[in-house]
Length: 156
Image (cartoon, rainbow, N blue to C red; front, side):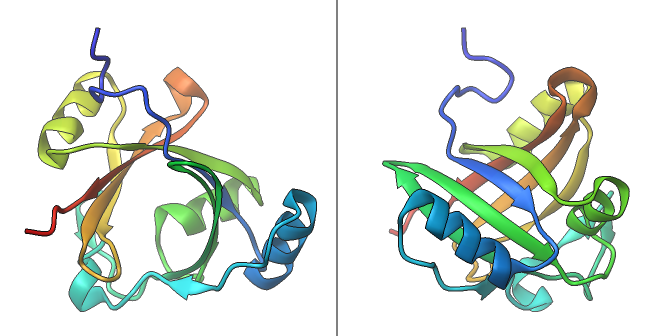
C-alpha cells in the first residue's frame, strides 16, 4: 500500500520557535552535537512562496537543521512576523512541534492526493537555493499536525 504521499519515509520533524539562536543552542546541547548555522528561506524571487494560493513576498524565516540519523533531520523555524504558515502557527499555538516532512517526487500529484484525503495545501514554495520545493498541508484533523512534502530536483 503506497499511502497518500506514496512513501512512509520520514525526512524531518519541524519545530516553530521564537528565537532560533537560543533554541538551536539548547537543541545542540540536548543532542550533544555542534550548533548548526542559521540560514534563511531565500529571496522571494527564488522561493515564490504562496499561502493558500496567494503570493507572500514579504514572508521569510530563519532555520537551523540537525542531522540526527541518516536521512532524518530536526528543523527549527523562526518566522519573520509576516504572513506564513509558520507565523500563523506561532500566533495560534506558540512554540512547538509543527510538521512531519516526507521526501517525494511529483509535488503536483502529491498535492492532489493530500487534498483528496482532506488535507488542504496551505503553503508552497521553492527551496531558498532553488534546488527543490516544499508544500505544507493542514493535517491537524487527521494526524494532529501539519505535513510537509520535500521534493529535491535531480541534478542532471
